[in-house]
Length: 256
Image (cartoon, rainbow, N blue to C red; front, top):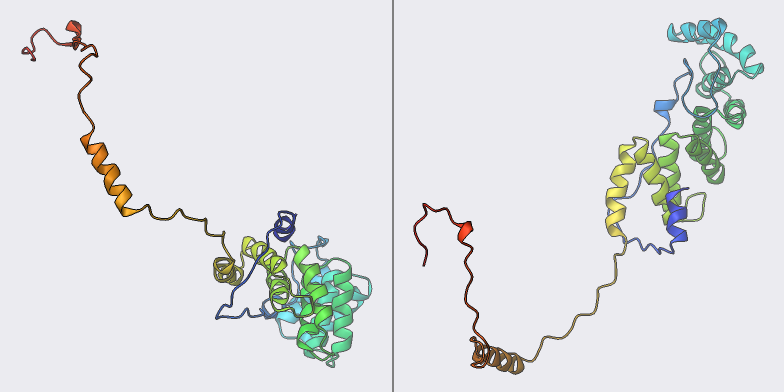
């Protein structure tokens, strides 16, 4: 269960004070490289075929035209990694004519089949209006899909959107929950954001304190305490101290 759900069940009301530094979206450049191996996020991919590897080798040589020619038939056969790689080439116009609309289609098609990296790429195309109309609601949808699949970038950016109210209704408990999950997934920006936001949450209400006792009354009480007898009353029996003879070593000097 997500952290924000737990907060709501407990009835915690979070009041976030103004913080000087605003959250910043992380771009997808780190995730824009072509898929080369099986991803550990989202739907597990089968081992790459030899033909797919040939496309990777062509891409690494800078032969984008050949890479596109190799990956496109595989993408048309629902190879998720190939679909994402074709989208990348179409998005950047490498090895083929730049076509953002087709790129987004391949990203979303792979994302709909559970490929988290493609989900994140689709989210950024919508977020940035990268060759397609800007659509914050669609960006939030795809970030959420990638976040559920365990992508730290998607988790962090979804938290930013909830914090800002961009594409979604502003919801600080959800923002904090996704920041926490992103931080747990290793996102340093999410950890830094939590370090700013959590101390700004309203703390417990200050308890009521008893008033300071009257000074004169306190002084009289101290005087009465000092005047109290420190010896037992005369009619009380006086007990003789008992000494355990076996508690002393016989060679010890006598103790009075």
